[in-house]
Amino acid sequence: MLTHTKKTERISHVEEIELIRVAQGSHPVKAKRALDKLVLANFGLIHKLVSKFPMKNASVSHDDLFQEGVAGLIHAIHKFDVKRGYRLSTYSYNWINAYVRRYYQNHSRNVRVPIHISDAQFEINKLIRKLTTEL
Image 1: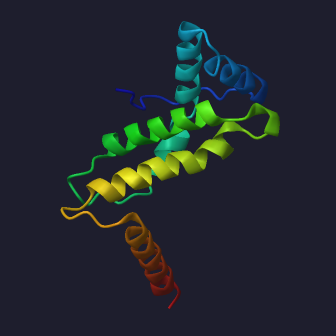
Image 2: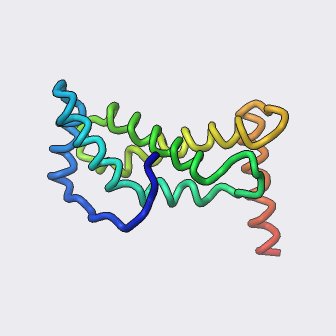
């Protein structure tokens, strides 16, 4: 299990591109090492996204959401197109968010609510909090 234990060094854009090419390559040992380095370099992004979800329900733990965030990051690394010129963190933000949100919505309640209804409720609650602070 991957855990966030210390602050990791940032990698440069050039090094990131090279690691992504290796991770998407066919050599399994080198690809695994590159993938591990990319995941470790982006732990902060995963932690930032996971910390946005309320942990008032005991059925979903921070570690479970973090693992789903890692799965989303790995998916983003495999789908990332280096030719577009973006940073991996920019591209992977939505994949990590989607994986974590889907896991949270499917496991945080005793009765499963469809994702689109849960998304609507999340947006309504966010709007209620915003209007409460303004008014």
